[in-house]
Length: 482
Ligand code: ACO
Image 1: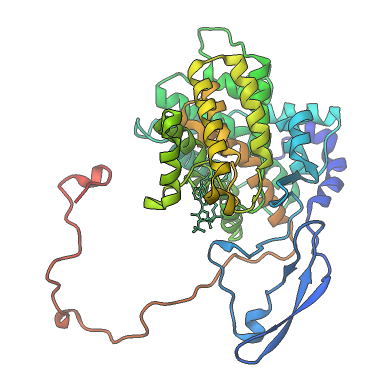
Image 2: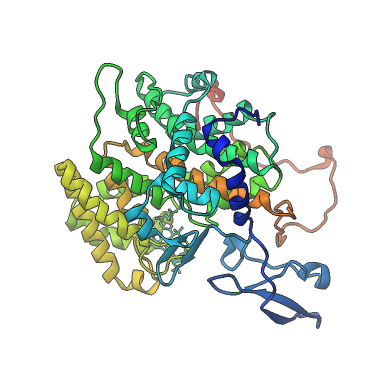
């Protein structure tokens, strides 16, 4: 990466170097041996590892080469894919730690910028380190003017997540030649640049969709204030923002910063394992986040509350969620890891009250009351009790966003902005490992056995062609019902 030493780098280059080395995960020694006997009579001894916290893990890397067997685990219910020092979740207790610090403590006493520092450097900053770091982050919020041109190419009704996939991927066209992914100092700069530019890219996605003029970041505002400034100010008026709103947004940013090996983070790691450009890897993570079973849930919760409309409809709606028709689920409920209340949802619920008290918008208050009633009804229902389905972080997020005037289609974009620190630090962690292997899972093949090739002139004609006939000019538009 081009060496333009700024204040931050002059002051910290040596002191941070030794500290960053602590963020490199070191494989523990085996704590036990598991013996596995296979149907072919072969027995294999597999090392068992115990982390600082959490369940023990059986190392199966030698299983195939020594026995000929693979493991099958679609959805990765029982599979650990990496060794990490970043985030710990105890799903039964409802506990979440960022580098050892409970999320509730960080949410109360820290800030998103501090959490970013914590993830990049492995420790909480001193006041001086924090000030210099925030200064650097804010100064990195501007984006190349040429990138702004990209926004003009999207259809006017584009979902902002579609725009984010495109523009974050496009960062790789601006930053590709001048860094070495094997150099920790370059990786640090990549992380700072990505996380600093995400709010700008998101705010521009919002503003161009509405035809509003672009607002450049300004050094007189903090990182979070800058996001609100770029989203909501106009060149004609002074910008004033309430401290309660800034604190609420800052807390939401912290709550979403990282969540160990979820679908989007694993996607970033898998893409990164081929040594692809890190900005392109983050675009892949954004794609995985978009779906309603993951980050898209915050948008889906609000749409669901609007559809429910009033408390009389709650029992009917719960019934629909239980019936499993059309893959319909109670959005904002359930989690692969949490089998207890998501600790982030508790913080979010409390924050929801403080924001609604401040904004006093009648509609948001009604929505939050409906959400509380829905939560209470679900938590009393046998279906949800037996499956240990509790509200997750996204159950209340949408209500808070709406109160902050963030449009529904931007909810998942907000998540992507907040999660960028987790994604890039997980990528940094993976790249810091001494031995890197490309991610390459296997499959249980149940398709055709090898069969004879029939020359085209000898093949039977199908009665009805299976190829759909598309109307003229359909290539210019979206899907059509045929
Ligand atoms: N509503 C109704 N039933 C549910 C729900 C739900 N929200 N979540 C899980 N279930 C049921 C499943 O149908 C299944 O029932 P079964 O045992 O009778 O077949 C059982 O609970 C277990 O569900 P799985 O699909 O195995 O759970 P998994 O760990 O794969 O899924 C997930 C977790 C995707 C989060 C799921 O709970 C869900 O779809 N929730 C709604 C979407 C959501 O809120 N996503 C946000 C997650 S948090 C985040 O990404 C920030």
